[in-house]
Length: 355
Image (cartoon, rainbow, N blue to C red; front, side):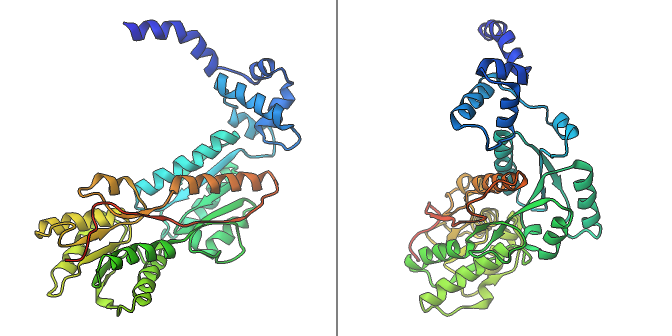
């Protein structure tokens, strides 16, 4: 009953907030409608105190621009597209939330378009989507962001493109990049295991076409070499970024006469699968076997024991990519067109001293 009374008292105020118009914002902020429009379009001609005053009213009234009308009214587009083909649901959700956060703050809409990166008609599909949706640009994640020919074809459609790419140096100058230093993070994880006394360390990989797999494997190998540990190629298991791949990879590694004392999993889903399989085979974690993941997804905190991993702030990475894309679509000056993130080691309960 109390909730109903609260709703009745606030219904009119909530309704007005939901229905707030640009006129309402201008009146309450004490500025012209044109000034509100300039603020919402993030035009540089507005003084910062005025911008802050208008945005405070926008937030208070929950004002939402009619983006469809804006797109139809002029030549500028106010939509950002995110296309993806990634088996990791947590990764996709983080990317969507990060891009959406940037779009909301800057008055843009987000168009989400899942697709099959291996489809024969992929280019036609995306071309039609771009033309019909009148988007300002694309945020590309792997595997699309790591295919130069595909990236160039998108740019040829006369739209802005920002890529999220694994590595520490941009692969080319075709389009701006948000780089993720998987190599350094993988080196840190492997070094952590070596410092615990592990010398026989298995590696369960993700898909070979993802550059993150290549970079994480390279970091693993580099850490072994830096510590004068001979690389055993048989300990490297080709797989996919999935729970099932972790199960199968761990079963393979733990069925051998000389079992590894630790397993580096290329992401947290793989690690969760490896943990599951290890338990089925009677292994005690971490007393008999240490297992690590990568990305610090919810998987890493929901398993028992919780997973040692690398914290990759995917939502922040996606938000930065979208902000960079929007700035470029508005022809604004950008201080840095290549940004670098290095995932940080997070030590939890799934790793311990070698038996």
